[in-house]
Structures are given as structure tokens and as C-alpha cells.
Image (cartoon, rainbow, N blue to C red; front, side, top):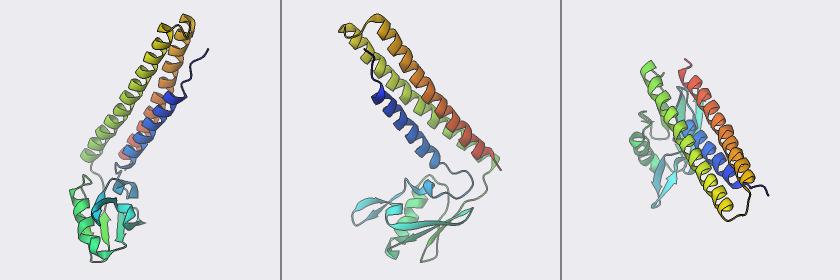
Length: 184
């Protein structure tokens, strides 16, 4: 009998997807609408994602334009962007909100690099926890005599190989994001 690890593989894939979302929210000097994905505004009594109440466009490499469908939301959107950790001051002209992304300083690039390294490490910790869950499952199967000792050793090796594969993908994503951050 071989042990099925599709659930663990799927969970590790989710950890990688989450890492990609985290990386997408880190701005790298050029305007990217993904940085606004986490921002919500109060709309008719409930917190609504910004892209659910406005059109977000990028007229050039350094600017994002947020055009709400309901202009009464302009002040609320402006406040939400200011209170976020974006570090950008929104400009409200009464119809749209403009976000101008400044050129990143060397110091800011290094801060962002530390931040993305932390995100990658968090993802790897999550993956190691998933592997631990898998190892516990395999030990339980062995204890209940559902698998042999050889099958247990093979399953544990397969789990470690799975972790290594996903850790490598996380490291590759980190290297690509660091390269993007350090590019001038």
C-alpha cells in the first residue's frame, strides 16, 4: 500500500499561492494594481474590496488611477489608502484618485527585500508544518499496522521530497521578487 499525499501537496500549493499573493502586494517601484488588493472600503455598511467599488487603471508605469463608480466614495477610498501600509499619498481631484509611485530608494529596496524574505520563510514554515502533519499520519498508519516499516520509510522520504520540491519553488519565487526589487 502506498500512502496518498495529494491533500498535503494541495495544502503546500496553497501556501505557495498565498506567498505569490503576498509578493504581489509588495510594490517594486512601478505601479501595479495588485498593491490595492488588500484595501477595503465601507460601502453600504459592509467592508468591500476596492476593486469591487472602483475601476483601477494604470495610465503609465508609475501611476495608478482609481475611479469609483459612486463618486461619494472618493473620501472613503482616499482614507483607506492613506491608512494602509502603502506609503503613498493619494491625490483626489473630485472625480478620480491618483496614486503616483515614487522611485524606490536603496534603503526602501532593502526593507522590502527583508519583508519578502520573511514572507518566503513564513511560507516554508507552513509547508514544514504540513510535512509534520503528513509524518504524524504515516506514523499513525504504522502504529495501526496498516503499513509496513519499509512503506513508512518510503512514505516519509516521499513527504520530504514533496517538501523539498515546494521549498525550491518558494526559493525561486523569492529570488525573482528580490531581483525585481533590486532592479533600478
